[in-house]
Image 1: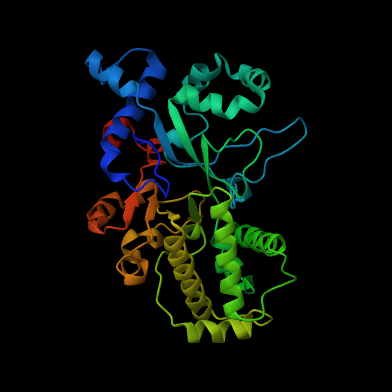
Image 2: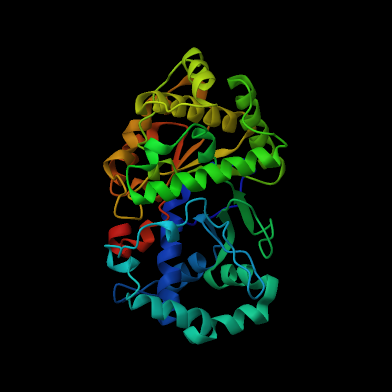
Length: 366
């Protein structure tokens, strides 16, 4: 999802005002790549309007760019929950299927022929990711990654790390049993939490809830200092967006019991997750980091579409403790885009339409 205008220092707060310009830019760019002529729906676009729109550099608000690797190396940090770890399935929408003929046109527009991709990558070297942005008219891309890396310069790629692992410090055996995808996901989240603990110099789980909250806050602070502009939560792949408001005494009790041993009930664990979610959200507000939430139907045969309804988060949005936090609903809550649009009266709610460009055709998207 792109938008015009210079990037703001604290999470690009004017996304809504530029959605129309961005939509026009994306549609025009795709059409120009496909046919090299300013045509839309069989009609010529006004040349002056076309040139003006075509000159606008987009800001891609959500992507998973790969870092540059040497032969034999692999980049596994482009997502905390990569689609590759899911049970194999064929996506439903035509535009997401591997046999979509539009993909061939995209390959040819970028490389001439699909077989030339590796040659171009080798020629461009560390400049390859930025070269791709240049071909697409993208000035800045928000990079959802566990960590940044080679070929992703901070002037073009803005870091958005993942915070889900903080919400799952207990035994996740019961949650992982729900389906094969969640089994893989919770294994990945446990490893990521351990990585965060190790990077922070911790020798195991903090002793008390206060210590754990301090650990979470310190990591968020380090991310901010390291160039992060937002924190991403993929919680819709792990649970619903329904977030309660448990008090700290209850969270303290649960942490004292289950941070060392035992298996929390689903209700107890959800209550603790809700408490940590609110802590992350409030800290993002304090630090000037936007909070990016996956908010649409997602990949995989087990994804719970009903659990991603944006209305579930209204109690959080209107909480006075969250007024400084900018909640960005990634993918615009498709198929609940209408409901989310009605929620834009909330002053701390923003959205993009990333992903919808791969589901819908331009007329429906517009």
